[in-house]
Image (cartoon, rainbow, N blue to C red):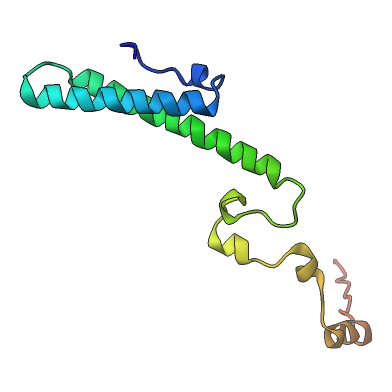
Length: 125
């Protein structure tokens, strides 16, 4: 692998197989660097940091691509998997829908028609 950092913009053009191969190459290089770090006191710490971040970038691109494919697959289906649904707070997820909020009981409807809110006009002096 090259000595420069992996750019995430370049990763988007690659296929999944190429990305998996890139991750495995980076991981082997990281393993070799860790062995070098133990055996000799070489200043490879920055390269180790860059490799770890590069691995994370490629894995992120792999996961995002996979999720976008899953979103396309489930687009017109009745149910979405839980991890693809919009993440909201627990309270918002349990809140009543606008249709449920608009519903009123039969007794409440009768009460409002038979005993409407009285209207008062206050005369100004």
